[in-house]
Amino acid sequence: MRAETAASSAGIRVCDHPECALGGEHRAPKSPHSLREYFWFCLDHVREYNAAWNFCAGMTQDEMDTAIRDDVVWGRPTWPLGMMGARGLNATRGFDDPLGVFEAGEEAAERHRREQAQRQAMRGPNGHHYRALQLKPPVSLTALKARYKELAKRLHPDLNGGDKDAEERLKEINAAYAALKKVAIQNS
Image (cartoon, rainbow, N blue to C red; front, side, top):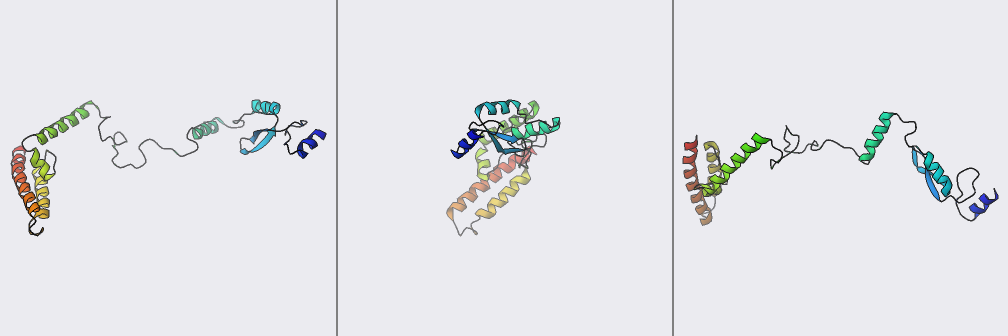
């Protein structure tokens, strides 16, 4: 009792182990349910306490599994990858794959053939016509007409106050429409 009084009067925390008068420099949680409340022990008694510590004492197997799962993600909510309402999700794969990295054999081959044909058409004799109308091949006659009408209305000289640049652009649009209209009719 005398050592305890001397230690406490000197401002040193006393070991919480019964019958120990040494300084309590090492903390240990009181229980798994109160991890922020501590016992203060000397080195020998904290080692003894830690050796006997069992966080899962009194828990069922399901409670232990839940505690482990929560600790893995630091107690934060989780969900399957790509399932948080992201736009453009692929219904079969459950995630967006704009580059086609995860496409299966025939699906990837078909996509590659379409892209190859599109690149070839853009490099071909009508490539500048597609670029003028800001379209990518293949284009249906209906889509071609819709795009032409949109650009013709926007670039018409009456709406642009006689702007020469708009007039030249409209001439380019007219020539591109005429050339691509022939291609669209041949392909349909």
